[in-house]
Length: 264
Image: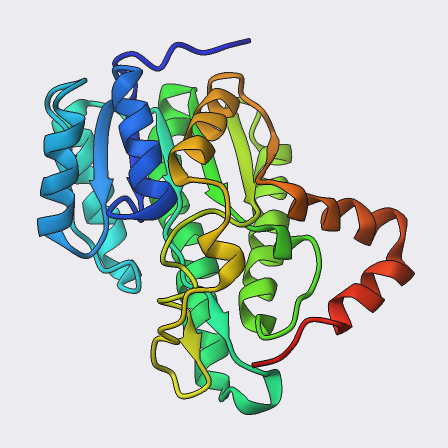
């Protein structure tokens, strides 16, 4: 059944840029009561000003999402302000651009910590409130490489596979919760620029595919529509989404295609 997002308390992580920022603006247009989380308070305040054009009273909640010990307190802050949490959109994450043989294990751990353990921990912090109110909607941003492996992204792909397994399981366990897995392809954002390289630092390069990908606002409109319709899983992107179906139905072709990607 389609849900009305007006006055719903919607908490978005990774809200300061890219897909998260665009989703926040679309949610504001729906009249949602927003909780905006990322590291930069300045960027979140700028986003709040944009959202205030459509809906008032967004909560700016800066957080370092590596610090999972702060999550229970943050969830309590949200509930103390709004009385409830209707939707949590786990969108924050980091990508990778490094060959497996060149990346130290610390890099794999860093990617997994932010992309998997952080949304799992925040979800567990929010879950008791949703169970008590007997309703709630949790979303997680995975990736098309959560459906298959891809060069230079072994840790990233692993983390995105992992969240699909976790949140599919959560959906099967909790009858009162809706769970949506968002699976973007190439969307215009700085995710490739900020991707962690073999030296542990930001790669600093914009992938051509990313630069020419779906605009973030177009992606956000598709995502918000899917959330309103309580979709369990949503693929969003352009022709690159064909790789998901090729991997499933034509695996030999997928293996060949994956090998043709140049490792820079």
